[in-house]
Image (cartoon, rainbow, N blue to C red; front, side):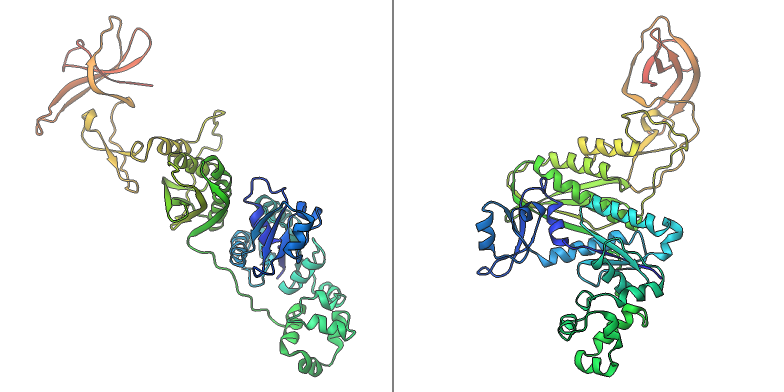
Length: 471
């Protein structure tokens, strides 16, 4: 097996920066008790002004009086680590997030599908950059060695156990991620690298440092199996973004909304699924407003879901400031892509039908656009019925061509130069329900070239009544 380790050196900071419209302004994560606030992490703009992690907040204000501060939240950091584990799951079925600040995944089994390691590495880096997370990547035959190599040099890849052991022997003990403070204690004893540690008597190492150090070395070098806690993707999606300030306009909500929709679609692609219903919750100080988004079929196209959500969001009246956004999708059904011809030519600026349908629903309302199903009644007014969302639809009976535009009521058609194109289609029905129809329908061409659907009494070709138009 070959393991890749994705080290996330500033995971908590990246999780904050990726939701800001302007991440270039000075910003710092702040933690610790109220009397002893310290900087947990700083962005490049703050670092350029002299701020650094571990600095006291009072000292930071002395160097730079105006910079944004966000409370460091360990739970949010763990949430984003799980999110990235879910993202990594689409590249490998063996993913672990058991160590804080990194993701490890088995990659040898993916070579046949995704290509050799350089191609997989480039793909991982491109997707992480698009998601907005700083990273370091390394590969080794054991997950612990990959984690150590990622901390030593970004891009280091070793695929042979003998080469891995040679490199590990030269790793300084303080950078070998030894359990507890064993690395520092060994360094103070004058032991500088792992080769020297392994040369020590085993009983002596066990008495001084305990069994975990020996187990760590065996798993690091591949002498013993490493039982990792593997990640299992959840069956729902739930994410929340706390806004930096109170928001009273829709426009300011669009940037975090786009990020949340992108994260949702990332999780959907991992599961090879889609979403048909989800809720965008606008959180206020003591209440919330739910914006429900429903689709006729499961979708996972980011731009489509964002446009639909934005359309529905713009119809909501914001009578109170919004302090946070939450996106919740409880059901993630399988995704079945729309069938298209191999050489299908789509006009520029035209929308695919599913996207146009959902946009109309978002603009006009859910009840304005619906599915229809054919019936056995030949009368045009009763040949179709409204169908439920998930109901199966039978094949329509074979009939002569009928127009898509049917008038509410037939009206007289007056044109002295009408030409019969096809017909008649004779209807004799409805005597049992009091709405009897006895008509001969024809397709007519008017003097202006329009195709009309009109009828006349049975056996006659005059006194036309217009009932529909062909496109």
